[in-house]
Image 1: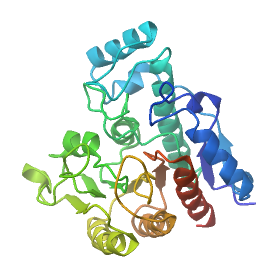
Image 2: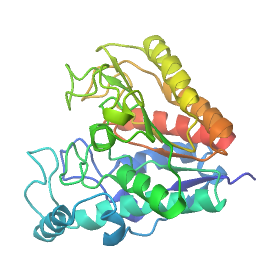
Image 3: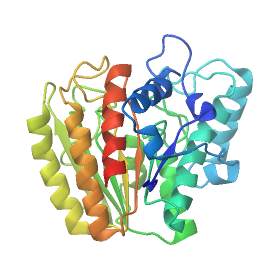
Length: 315
């Protein structure tokens, strides 16, 4: 049996979520795992329980004083880590560090040839900035991953693909002037949705001009409009020939998500995963890591993430 896809799920990872009534709840991983098991997908991947990320690893991206704030808020177990979207809870530091640990263990496995690809459904926390939480994201596991791929493995030209309905501002702006991070981000137009960013004219800054592609979609956009945007993104990525691929495949663009207004189906997630894998085979020796990102309907995220996992397994 092909176990080339390593799937990061487990009790500790499932603890990343917020108190009752918050859109990002602790039952998201369980809903996905139940759906994947029902479809016979779990046994076709290698299931991994990740180690917790260390403070030194987290500091590759985040400022030390911000990490201190998270540790104190985690001990206190109340209040907010930002202006009101991201509440502290007892153990929030450890839960967020677990998400970072999953990203870095996935990178280790892919770079060592133990895995061809990985999937971290509880991950892809793309709003957190180096010095601040934002948008339900405590630590930016993607930023820590990018820094680690460079410092530990010598990977420079990295593709970051983001199809979450919200613009990946915590990655985009922290690397806006980095010419070696190639960004293709398809999202709902920021004029109509948090975080209000990711406009088409934002293509990178300074030496990085032209290395970033924002493709905003109007509210109500469906698969047909999404795939037109993806064709442009695919040509863009192909032209830059990255050495490693990161796919943030948030499920909140599916029709019926309570926080957004696109009308995609899980076909979008399946096809983007297949096409991203083909790009990775062409340019990056197949090296690709996928992250679950957002999604606030348990049914939608289960369907979308199962589509991603199935595409990864079948590659």
